[in-house]
Every structure is written in structure tokens, then in C-alpha cells.
Image (tube, rainbow over the protein chains, first blue to last red):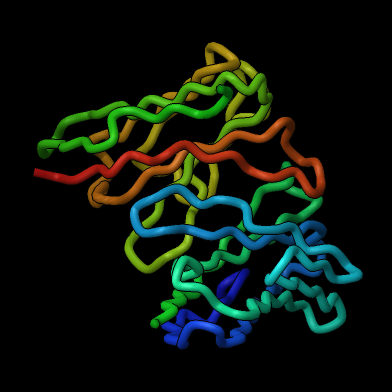
Length: 111
Length: 115
């Protein structure tokens, strides 16, 4: 079993739709959680950190459930420009704080 | 502007050849990392360095080597022992290793292909 698991998708949604991605992690020592966005053949870019109380940044909402060991990303009012791969990243407080990446969930927003 | 510079953008390797990927940062970050990404997969850690003159193996270090002689530079050599080197290679840095909520800054990547 992978340390960080994501539904690979692809998720194909119309503009304006609401879409949610989940990510599960197996290391209970994990302390930091992030969502990165990656466009094709480009470097990942930080979308948002995920805090215990949940957090929102415009159309994006991230939530953490430590008991069930999963994080989620909700995108409201999808735009064409949201089409990308979304990577879940989990960081432990051991092992020099190495980041472990999920394989990503691909989103395509269509007109 | 501060950032991470990777070069070259595209690199071709012949059988039995060693090649070196460059990574330079001017962010004054202590920690630097090399990741490999295969199509449809996430990033896997090859090597990381928490401080100058120190580096540690990641999850897939076999067939690779690194050096960290200067804080700004963390080159990766793909040796002939790496039998399947074709992949997208990403260099990253963070202010310090092992700090919670510390985000990664990435270079734009190098696509390595075998001739």
C-alpha cells in the first residue's frame, strides 16, 4: 500500500461545477499537509497548506481529518484554468521531514 | 528575482554515459532535494541535503549521485548504473529541512531521455 493515495481520476467536469478530491495517508506521524497543482510538464506549485481546522482560499477549501487520516480539496465554481493535476503532499515530523507525494488527481474542466 | 534554476531543460543520454543535471538556488535555503517523476506518477525522492557538505539517500538513490559543495548548488549525476533513467527530474529547496509547514520551492525541471 502506498504511503499517500489519491484517486487518479481523471475528473471531467463542466465549467461552474463543484468537484472534490480526497487523499489518504498511512503514516500517523504525519504533521504537515499540502495540496500542490501541477500543469503538464511543469513544476508543482503550492496551492494551499491544509490546517487542522480546515481552511479556505477563494474557491478552494481544504480539510484535514486526522482520525481517519485523510485530507480533501474542494473546488467550487470550476474554471477552465483549473484543469491540472492536483498532488497531495504529506510531511512527517521524523525522517528530516521528508515530503511524500501522492500520484496526483487529474482534473479537466470543459466549457 | 529569487528562485531555483535547473538546466538543461532537455537532456539526452547515450547508453553507458553519465550525465549531470544542474540545480542552483539563490533563495539562501539550507535544504535541497532531487525528485524523479515518471508519467502518471507522483514525485519520488532521490537524494536530499539538509546543509552544505551533507546529503542523504532518498527512496530511489540507486544509480544516482550528488554533491553539495556550495549552499547554492546541488547537482545530480545520473550514472550508467541507472538502467531506466528516462523521467522528469525536479530539484526543490526549502528554508530548512524537518520543519513543519515548510513548503517546497521547485525548479522548472529537466526531462531526461535515453537515446
